[in-house]
Image (cartoon, rainbow, N blue to C red; front, side, top):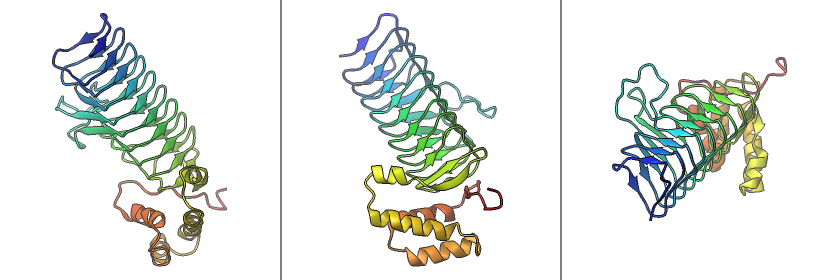
Length: 266
């Protein structure tokens, strides 16, 4: 049975699962789909073709499904999908996709999207992602699983951030971030591997050792990136985490890859 506050405005064309709770002054538009046990605290606005998975919780003054901030958007039908168990805190904005992208914005399961964060049109955010206060994703950004974005971090359009990466607070990320990498600064540079995150998530000592060795080879000053990747792929072809980085770098992208600071730059 739904628990809907009398001040909420809920379209009869919205679809609900079991045990949902819609608090004071919320607005839920036609086409919205709320899974079982979704909770909208108060003053939440959800419109358009927006789906929230089971157990999601949305806090006051967040908006999902309003038109994207893209001058090329002409009202085309597009969607948002949010995975189960994701928590969206106060003043978060999530915008649907556009014709120039995939017409879809996705946020994975069990994410924590903190106060004032923004997820722009056509973004793909993985599972178990944490976006700290006022972190911002430009359009078409892809964020892998278990990524952490620090407060006030800003990510440029079309950037890819690999699984298990860490983006430091106040960082301006204009290039792709390798899986397991850690970046910081304005403009963001690669400061090493996210070793603390790897240990917390149960990666073995052997995998961490291999990642460290491969990282040193990939970002050495000798040779070209192509040559170094070839050498790493030959040496670590049986190591899945290392090969994930190699494949990530070799995948076509409109952005370059974040690099470490050179000794001279440092």
